[in-house]
Length: 226
Image (cartoon, rainbow, N blue to C red; front, side):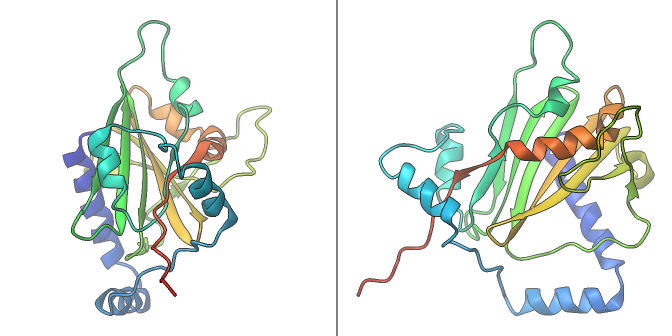
């Protein structure tokens, strides 16, 4: 799906959030109006280790432009350190599609980001926002579990799946889950075309892929000089 399509999806989710219970809406509105941000746990040992290891060496490079953008972010950046298993299942024998990658953020207010990677019939994105938490109305998302014979219970995050056509989107499915690292909620979204929509129902694999999420950038605030 194009960035335009992803933005449209974000607007759709925002509209759903407005339909949440009044109490949740008021709470979210109050937090936003007060300009409060989620406090990043910069003292987390994983961040300290990462910063120390990359003090004299470059972190994973996504290209000069993307690297410059990510260097401005005021939150740790998570991304997949290898191709997610759910993507590998959709790739047929033959030439692999060239990965298209985009970083979406507001350089004037670098407190959120979305890293989008497109692999032919599957698009995977990782996003985080220190400002806003979305609430979904009851029944808006259908939960699926992998009931295939021999499927092991998932030990990872719970995955929500819904049919995009139910919300006026393109044909296909969308799977989503959220994990919290360093005090920050990160949302992973997997969008499958009509041809690959069954892969978005494979919640066991999607959940397992969360193990591949890796810290690729961290810009802790400078410590005050004594």
